[in-house]
Length: 112
Length: 120
Image (cartoon, rainbow over all chains, first blue to last red; front, side):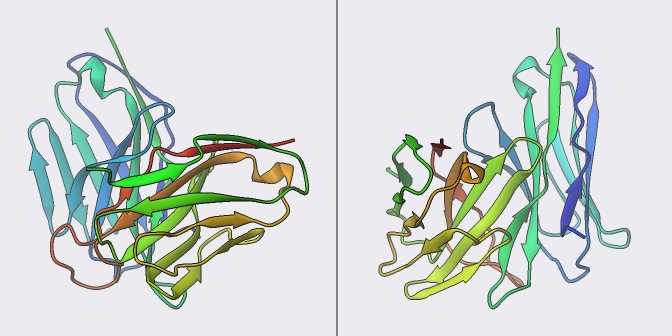
């Protein structure tokens, strides 16, 4: 099973809507996660870090649920500019050293 | 602030040819990595390094070699290109590796702009 899994979507929502994405992880020892945003044909860029119970930045809220092993990203008052693919990232402790594993991404389209 | 620089941005190869994708970072990051991104597959880790002289395999290492002779550079080599290696390649670095409690931001990845490779 892949370390990090997320719903690929697409999520099609109207402007102003609230949308939430979930990402499940398999390693209960994982302690830090990230949400990255990727625009079409561009590199991923950090959106938010999730180190403990959660994190909030303006319209964006990320939550970590250790008991159920998932993290979520909530976007309130969606804007057209929020249209992108959102990538969940978590640690993989396999191999000789740890590394970071990406989910496949959830595509969001915000419509007028 | 250059950040992470990848070259070339675009490359077309014939099957069996070799090439090297260059990656350089000027942030003194310990951790560097290479990912490939294919439609429907997300970003998959090819190889990574936690410091000069230390490399390890990721999810999809076959057909690729790496080395880390300096902190700044982490080239990815394709020894004999195959059509299955047609993809977008991203190099990424972070101050530290993964695992365990880390200072905030220590394992936040900074990506290069990507290299689009087509193998005919």
